[in-house]
Length: 189
Image 1 (cartoon, helix red, strand yellow):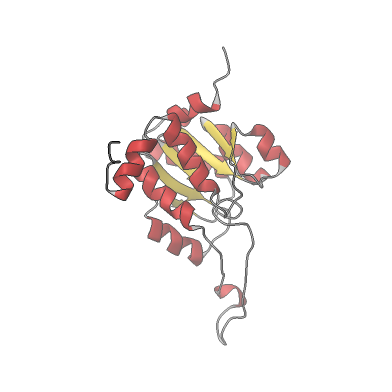
Image 2 (tube, helix red, strand yellow):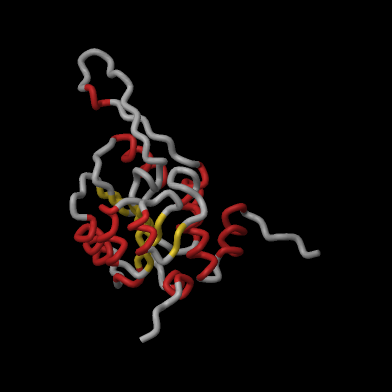
């Protein structure tokens, strides 16, 4: 059986799941000193790119469900996930493959209808489980080798937006989704 191209795989995607640190962020973790009485780890600061946030809205308009699977637990991530209205949010996950499989079943989909975006080796089991494996530009070499698509932007710098655009363009939905997002049709020239 011939191998499917990345575009062919992207055409089937109805669910996009992704890691957080190194994908939705640049991977840096900041822990400023906590006010008296709070545990040292109570305050965590992460930076999120606006393009990635917009990509979640674009995915939703294109009929693609979204969610995150991350090993860390973070109130900062929980806040961002609520802000983005992600359908699936799983933190504190040691086995990303099992979690990926559970979410796919919960969404009523087949594994080939789901994609995973990762950056490090812990993401490989989830990437291998789906129909489309995506690595961010700054992913580890092992991860890039197993990806069907590598984003032009690094994690935390619009990589998730690249993934969403790639999928929506492969599905022929990009133009309509952008028009719906900005609320206007292009003028006839």
